[in-house]
Each structure stands twice: as C-alpha cells, then as structure tokens.
Length: 510
Ligand code: HXC
Image (cartoon, rainbow, N blue to C red):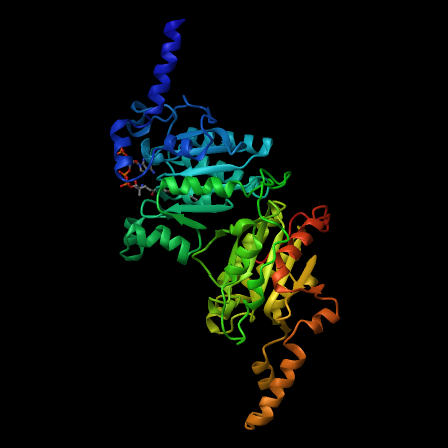
C-alpha cells in the first residue's frame, strides 16, 4: 500500500515538472511564471482542484510517441476567487510550446462543459504556439471543439482570456470569442501567423511586438481589453475584475461591502462644466465621484478614449458605465468608440449588469474616413445594443446631447428607465453654430444678424427644458446630488422585468 501511495506522489511530482526543469528555467528567464504558478496566484490559496493531471497525448507521428509528458501541456481544474467558483485552464509552454493536441483540447472542453452546467466563469491562461503541428487535423479538430464551446458559453458564463506568452493561430481565435482579453506587456503576443510567415507572404518586416504585442492590441486593433506589466500584476488585477462579475447569466453580480454614503453630496460637481461650451473637462472625475470609493475598473482604457467603458459599484452593486469623454475628440462618437461601447453594453445586458450612461456628445464624427470605414454600420451597433438591452438603464446628460448621438446614448426613446439631465445640458439636433449656418445661409454675410440668430437658437435649445417639457428627460437634477439620484434610481430598478419579443436571435449589424 505504502508503495502505491508513493508511486502516486512520484507521478504527481513528474506531472508538476511539465516539460522539465530546463524549460521551466527558460520560462522564468523570460520573466514568465509557469502554468501552475499562475493558477496559484489567480486562485484562493489551496482552492485549486485539478482534473486530468495524468492525461497524455496518443499521437505517433514525427517521433512524438517517445515524448508523452503527463498533463499534455495544459493544467485544468476549478477553484475559487474570493470564495466564488471559477474554472481554469492554464497552458504549459514547457510542453511542446503549450501547443494544442487532441487530448489537450479534450481537457479544456471538459472544464468548459462543467462550467456551463454548474454556472461558473471560465478563465483561460493562454501561452501556446497554437495547433500542435505533429498532430495535424486532429489538433485542428480539437481547436474547433473549443471554439464551439466558446460560442455556446457566450452570454451564459463570463469567459476571460489571459494572454501570457506568444499565442498564434487557434490560440488567438479561441480568446477572440471570449468576453475579455488581457495581455502582459513585453512577454505576450497574439497573431494569426508570426513575423516569419508575414515576411514570406506579404514581404513586410515586422517584429513580434509590432505585429501582435500588447501595445498593438490595446491601442490599435482593440483585440485586447487591457495590458499589465507582468504576470503577477495581471493575475492580481483579474481577481479584482472577477469580483465585479456574476458567475453566470442565471446569477446577479455579487454585492460587496461598501463604506461610502450613497447620498454623498459632491459640491465640486456644480462647477465641473466649464463656462465655455467648447472647453473640455474630465468625465473620469464624474465617474469617480459617483462610484463607491471612487473605484473605476476601466475596460479598453487605451483604445477610443472618446468613450469610456468600465465597471463601478454603487451601494455595493456592480454597474457598467459608458461615458463620453470630452477630453478626447470632444467626446464624439466614431467607428472605434461605437464598437467599443456596443460590445460593453452587450456584455452588461447578457449578464444582468445595470448600465449607467453619462452623456456629453457633440454627435457622430463626420468625414470621408469615417463614412468609408462604415460609421453608419458601426454606429448602428451601439444604437442596436442600447435598444435591445433590458437591464436597468440610467442616463445623465451633463452637457451636449446632439443629433443621432442623443438618441443613441441610452435615451428615453431606447427604453432608458431614468433619464436625468444637469441644468447645463443642451439637447438639440446640432450645436448653435452649425444650425444657424444651415437655417440662415442667406444671412451669413451679416455678422450681427448671425450673432442674434445664434443667441436665439441657444436660448431656445441650449438647455434641458425643451426635452423635459416633453417627458424625454425625467428630471433636471443638481450636479452635486448625482450620486444620490443615480443610487436611488438603480435601487428602484432592482426588480425590473422586461423582455424582448421571442426570436431565434437578432441580427445586429456586424
Ligand atoms: C508543436 C510547438 C509548436 C506547435 C512551438 N512548439 N509551437 N510544437 N506545435 N504549434 C514547440 C517548439 O518546437 C519548441 O520545442 C517549444 O515549443 C518552444 O518553441 P520555440 O519556437 O523554441 O519558442 P519561441 O522562440 O518562444 O517561439 C514561440 C512561437 C513559435 C512564436 C509560438 O514556436 C511558433 O511560431 N510556433 C508555431 C506557431 C504556429 O504557426 N502554430 C500553428 C498555428 S495554426 P522544444 O522541444 O525546442 O522546447 C493553428 C490553426 C488553428 O493554430 C485554427 C485557427 C482557426
């Protein structure tokens, strides 16, 4: 009996070594943690329960049959983050570069199926050279099995992808179908094919960093939702994100203890809006002053800064925030910001997270580059996302709400539940200058007349009261009481029930 127990310990020790000490050392030398070290940091201490530690590949080509490490390049199982359950897979780069074989895929599929059945999120730690080349179509089939589960799990349980090494091929397409992707700066890359293939096919010479580093994907492509400096920072921050999220679409996000008065008055907000309507101010200040303890977990911080997206808590409950940022491009809606916000709104709606929308938007960005890029279709994504969302929707217009962008930004007409405006709000088809130039084109040579026309337009439209008269704005509120008004609105909406007509699925403009 003793021998048998010792044998188990030996086998476990062997499995824990993955691809061997030399490769573990190489992983560390690159500034990366191993697959198991990452799980340890991500999960609560001693909470990890492993599956399939002794699984080995069954392939026999290219001499690979002589090399069959336990675990087959991925560590899978479940554990807890601050006491809440989560399923995890962590690819082991020390075993065939973390590449995905048939059996490696089966291990991932097993925990994904369990996550769906038990209603808990999946966090995938990706550090993989993609499909295992020696296995050919068997590994492609394995990837497709994972992809299919990514699709079925979408909107059922949150799926978070951590990119923690060079990821190619299937290793990027699976994350691409999950809710959030985060990368580590300088050690992680995402590309369909690496620099060598790019050089052969297109003759472009690029480094891995330029092609698919964290900077590329957080600032240019928007494939990734955020980046961190190292493995430890990433895993700590993902624990923080996890606390904002519900376990599944059957669940509500957790309520966290809070030590911040929901009725807190913020006198400084009464002077947040500058006297000059063209002068920007920082919308993040308003978000921080509304949120419990000023805590804002920003998503896609480095992309399309003209719209801000992220999570806060109000009275301890998770709220998704979408806000125009006057500091960047005057807060205009364009292709990138519409796509960014639309995806975020859909995530919140899928997972029962109420949405707070803060509006200061001069409209959609005009011009050929936007039109050629399809701003009509991309802007429609955001319109569609807000229109289909049935979660509680609270909107505060702080200053401009012009044109189609007024409609889009969670207006009353798109089933906004509480639509507030500050007294500084201007709700109109367009700003005074543009309107006067169109309406009084024949008078453009006469500066006095135009000035009078502009003033007349401003007096009539540069306020929230025309909309309030029509009931499109529920109440004009004092800026200093915004947190209290928003908190009370959200509290009153906790029992909200609203559903859309039955359909197989919608056809959002993609
Ligand atoms: C088998 C692989 C592998 C793979 C890496 N390795 N990728 N083994 N299949 N796909 C092995 C290497 O042989 C090496 O083994 C070890 O992992 C480390 O790899 P290195 O190349 O030494 O590491 P590094 O220089 O850091 O480069 C990492 C890399 C590179 C950028 C990931 O290995 C690479 O480009 N790999 C191939 C990527 C790729 O084209 N994959 C197929 C994608 S197609 P030893 O024994 O020396 O430690 C795909 C289709 C899916 O995924 C469907 C999509 C829709």
